[in-house]
Image 1 (cartoon, helix red, strand yellow):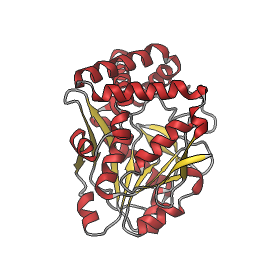
Image 2: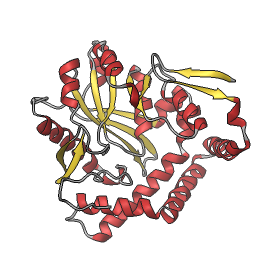
Image 3: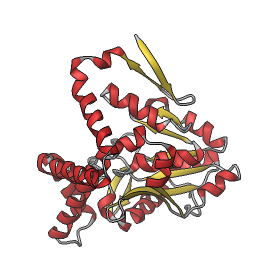
Amino acid sequence: MTDTAVQAPEGYRTCFEWAMLHPRYWGTWLGIALLWVIMWLPRPVGRVAGRAVGWLAWVTGGRRRHVGRVNLRLCFPEWSEEQREKVLRQHFRILGQCFVDYPLLWFGSHRRHRARIHLVDEAGVLEMQRQGQPAIVCAAHAPALDFGGLRLSLECGGVSFAKPMKNPIIEWINTRSRSQYGAAVFARDQGLRPAIRHTRQGKVFYYLADEDLGPAHTVFAPFFGEPKATIPALGRLVRLTGAPVVPSMGFYRIDADRYEMVMAKPLTDFPTGDDVQDAARMNAALEALIRRDPAQYLWTLRFFKTRPRGEPKVY
């Protein structure tokens, strides 16, 4: 038996199910309730909670620490070990704060979203939208990824993809959040055709392409000077839609205690017609954003798990 279906326009469907009230999910509901309470407490309490969650993730996340250290060593070999460790610790602090602040996305009003999440539109995407022009906002994986996506959808709707989560409660709440301002959210296995259709109609496509999804249908392109298995779809998307590519990244500014979505200037002379060169251009654009504040990138993902033939595994 189901109730309260959630579906973005033409997107995939999630529903509240009475089975979500089974005792196995009580811990999830309790955690959501606790985060909801923290959202309404004075902000210093939320910041302390974020720092505590980040510390706990650091202490218990041995595997994540290892992946982060490997990634930073590969990407910043010129740094000292102490500098890389400092950035990784700051990254875990940002992770903790973003986790604690997720109820802002789930339950916050549009006024709170505008107040807490700032758009830094260096590319002029909002002006493109006012003129009916599409854009492909190519985003880097970051703890603040969903914060930036929600803020962009508040201004111009859009279309994106998401990987369905194993926990049905979090999946239901996340889908409600991501589609609350009219964004069309599709599952990965639905393919690119729906996004291409929406983009051709003048929408913004919030596109993520920096994960290592394995050797199939990928090319190796440099990322921080390291060969990385990269999906070479971006150039084809531009050819099919005529949309400019806008590199983007979400940031949590610790000192200012606010979220930002930075949309950098569009790529020029893109695509080139060469998949490897286009993938390298995309990686370089995302790398430039990451270098603005390296602790903001999601270093705990295994971005280099697929290696060129003959090269040893790094994790």
